[in-house]
Image (cartoon, rainbow over all chains, first blue to last red; front, side, top):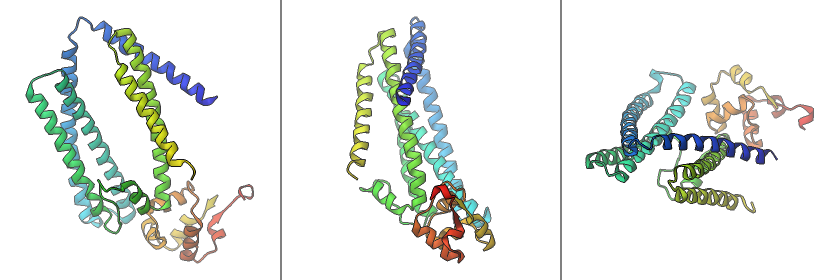
Length: 229
Length: 67
């Protein structure tokens, strides 16, 4: 019952959001949408470049502290510091990567000047490189632990095996909440796209199908993982 | 469940990281147990009991209705 009510609530909020977006989109009919996308592309590209710089700064800061933490803090504070700082780095890198992808896709789809496509692509590659390099930082931060490397074939299994029960408890809670949030977010996204398509006449059917398929596969994957255990 | 872990750690002048190393777990696990957000496995409870030289039931105190 609670779940049904929650889904209805999401449907309602999705409809409201969809209507709002659609009204904005239809009211800007006489405006050049390409121009708006151009500015969105520029803003996302600028933010991703700034985030790439922030990422380098955080990485250097963490590396400096990790080289001799006793200069800066005690053991417990250092453990909290490295854990949180590394998490911050991952958030910054993921955000920068997604924003540079948005910029790249806008400049490619709208066919703006080649220079913008090139800058976006270079930003994406730089952020990707930073992510890979910074992942190697784990072995410096946790020298006494046998943690798997990024790209390892059985990364998830090895990470689980290397983690103790408290860490697994934290990961499970985090992942479960994230999974719920992702499912809700994607469902809301479908509702928004439906209303957007109806009101503006710009068909988003492909995106709707794609999101729905991802939701179904995600649920199936989870069911397969927990089945007969 | 209540725990005296923080009190015992202070008694033995150990920080969370040192206790974690002795108990062969992460500092996060010690922190979770101290905040009473997580009930440890029997193995970790036993290790902690050994470190503090106290019986398990003196470190982890359960309410009657929990048992």
